[in-house]
Length: 219
Length: 282
Image 1 (cartoon, each protein chain N blue to C red):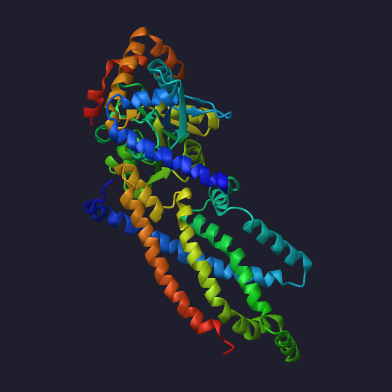
Image 2: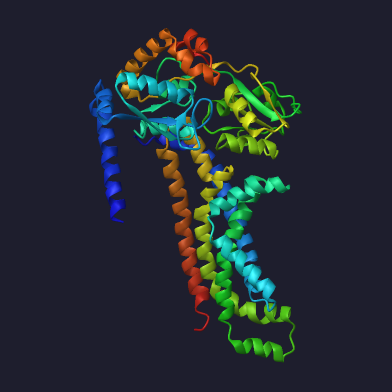
């Protein structure tokens, strides 16, 4: 096997096309995970047992089954009941909801770290439940969670090649189709690895900065 | 854990011995090696009637059946099949992951450059599966290219994908479908408008799907009849030649027809053409 630079430059535009989709899927998936995760965390704390138990069960279920299986389900089974999503939308929802069950745990830890006295003070000040959440609890709970959330963001980025299984033309799928028609794996797969590595390394630097900035609120 | 280490060691040494084998002994060495180990590793695709894996794991289909008989006559008792995507077969062959491809991988000039094909074994034309009544009136790959919204499903690295791209269908409208069942499902769900495979494969899938809303357009206009052959590593030409000798005998004795005709393939089509013609055709 020899490394062929000419081939590398020839396939680069195709890989970059795929890379755009990878980034897009990660960013959209992260947005879904951040929002749905917060909702799950709040609903999990609901005083109504039916709500908190159901949410708890659903999260356990999603966390306990493989993402790949969930993606197949969303893509191939949901159309049977009339829900037909495009591959990218199906992928973003799949990966977003899967990671939402993890981010929900991060949110939960953050929320539980807010001292009890804050809740009581909010009550004493006659704030409604939504007001308590928006003005008292979340502003204190969210910043320390940011580094942990960013961690999941990087993990999610590295999971996006799974979307190739449901025909999303992201980086991995583009590399596969290049390999399919040129019978060469070494360059496309190495480049896929490098693309992921570069972004991961940049993210790690960003993550460290976030930790410095937010994790030590007490200081 | 120990087991795992052991297995890694075994597979690593197997890998090295194969790599060494293909380079050091380019002549008859390969056949002797296969005889000695008692089995040959083939790549298949699970696309009936070309290749099929039963619910019990038994490998059948016209291509592996022919390969099994020929290898037996060459003195290799068993074939061990592994399922692979079409696109991964030739790289897998080059990487020494299998010894031959018997999967209905049709001969095309660029494939002939990459591997050593045997003489033709299975021939078939291309077909479309479409919604009932063929609402978008597809008769050729060109028709799909001309309809700006039409999406075609085809196996990644397969002949149909290439034909569609060559006919001018843009990359984003050629959906790479992982396997036949997914292709039919995507057609039923309306994710793709047409699913393209060889005639016999499409018939088999549509029959199994048992869906009256689907129909078959065959053969596709303008697409030639393709033939596959067993594909070997470029270094294993001697092995390929030995395979060809037995294949020729099989064709002459009439056993060849008995093997493939129950699957719906025409023996006459394979006998009437040759590797050189198929590899030159574009």
